[in-house]
Picture 1 (cartoon, one colour):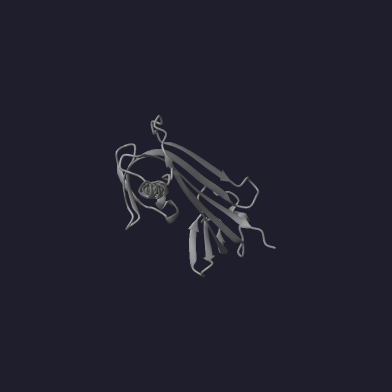
Picture 2 (picture 1 turned 90 degrees about the horizontal axis):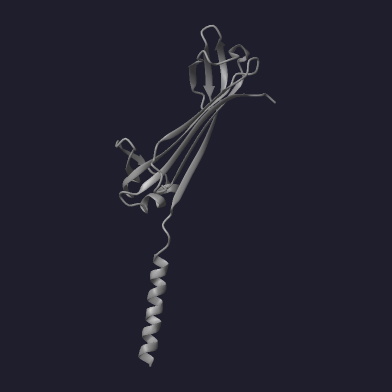
Length: 188
């Protein structure tokens, strides 16, 4: 009887250990970042549409304002220009019934006539890619696009567990969103 009791205990411990090793694989992951930079307007040449900026590090940057930039004449030396860049990436296992056709949405906004110069542009792209491989040593994932083109990408830390759990042939639903906004900060 002791033998059976010991075998039952060992069996229960083995089952518990196996259950602990079968954690569900991550089915999705996402990351996002927002970078904000400021620069001071040094000079504005309205006729030539040239703006000279001094960045936070002191570095000078000359920008040509395209014809779509409204209200350039309102920009003055000493104004603070704020630039914000946003990027988000989301991945999840693709629905098997999803054909994977790429879709994109773009948004463009610019300052109304008479207001301070500024604007924003953004784009979101969604597509299904075929996972090929992931190298954890280099953090590089390889995948193929719907047109068959093979691409590689460095996987950011917050998405590595998802990448490591994938196997060749998995279909991944990928959404990439990027946006850029430029505005003039009002002085206090």
